[in-house]
Amino acid sequence: MEKLTRKYGLLTAICMVVGTVIGSGVFFKAQNVLAATNGNMPMGIAAWVITGLIMIICSAQFAVMATKYEKVNGVVDYAEATCGKGYAYYLAWFMVNVYYPSMTGVLAWVSARYFGVMFGWSLVSAEVLALAGFFLVASYTLNALSPKLAGKFQVSATVIKLIPICLMAVVGTVVGITNGTLPQNFAGVTEAIGGSGGGLFAAVVATVFAYEGWIVTTSINAELKNPKKNLPIALVVGAAIVVAAYVLYYIGVAGGATTQVLIDEGATTAFSNVFGDVGGTFLNICIVISCLGTLNGLMVGASRGMYAIAARNEGPKPEMFSQVDKSTNMTTNSAIWGLFVCGAWLLYFYGANLTDGWFGLFNFDSSELPIVTVYAMYIPMMIMWMKKEKDVGVMKRFVLPSLAIFACAFMVFAACYAHGYTPYINAQADGKFSCPVIFYLIVYAVIMIIGAVLKGKKAKK
Image (tube, rainbow, N blue to C red; front, side, top):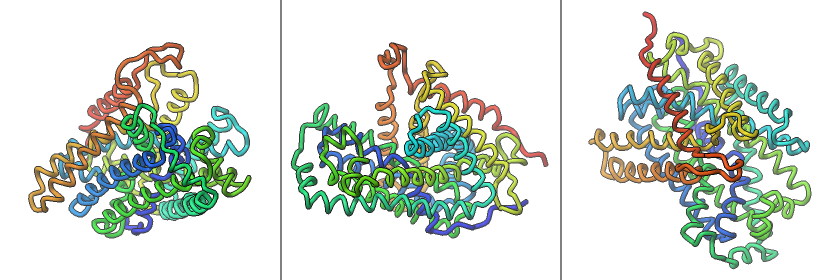
């Protein structure tokens, strides 16, 4: 049977981390952080750093696992080595049917949304939805027909998306210091909304989702050259680059306008003040490219998901989903399933979040709530690592995984806190009953039950 070849190098892996994490979030989350802290710049920087450290800790733990475990799909391999084949199957089933496709569908729409802004299209217009579908299919086509070209696009998109971030970080800081805006913003420390503690926590919650997506890099484990060396480097270096970019960009934006203006109008005003009227248009173009790069990175994971299951001779039709195309060296059948599920989640996101709500009580934000379960599913892996791996030092066996468990638990709590885990009456939805986390978990349970029913399917000999 045809097997996946080692076609990606270290640079592609690093760009997978940076390019998948840095999407549209960095460009609009600065406004959310400033609002949460009531313009308190030091507290805002602390929020970006705290969440960045959480990502670095988690990626460092998986980097340690990557030096010992290698098979088909990084995170699924780690789950199998620590918690067994059964747990690995359920993690893989979740990743391919919920985690990757839900975020991929949203990124297709976000890419179309920022493209449409340049033409004055409504966020819920037919034009935006049609373009979102096109972007989704185009990303699938690129990955299915030419995985190497998809890797090159990931590198290019990562470089392009870093241009406005670096420009604002450097030029915005210099301009802000020169005209006194930046010192004024730092000096004007006010009491955060909800007190200093509440403001900091709200700001951290606002940054959590801007850091998500780094785990996708482990999906190319079987196609990465020297993965036991390159994957750990990519995870740690990529995470460090993202944290530095976010913090420096946040400071640079504060040099382009007062905190109150940024809270009211967002980062586009800062770009216009620093780079002129073309700044806003330039920002939108870079955001579109940035989102497309993230979309491509997520599609890489989505298109390989069923293959990770089938390669273990589990799930529906493993003999079909384990096939690798001889011409493209791509998991074509797995990619087709990935496109279908991504399309389904794109339809769900549109109906649940951009209309009056097609799904009643089951309307929830599919771009963020999967974090509730994915980080919870990491925790048993960390615990079993500490129990099984007796040939590593104290730092790698106990200290780092303990920190990772705390970081994962925090991410779960932050997502629940932000979206609501107790029933309430939603005044913004005509007084309707709402409890997003609970109803998301119901959907999650149904999908996992379907996975359990299909788990016993084996390939025909």
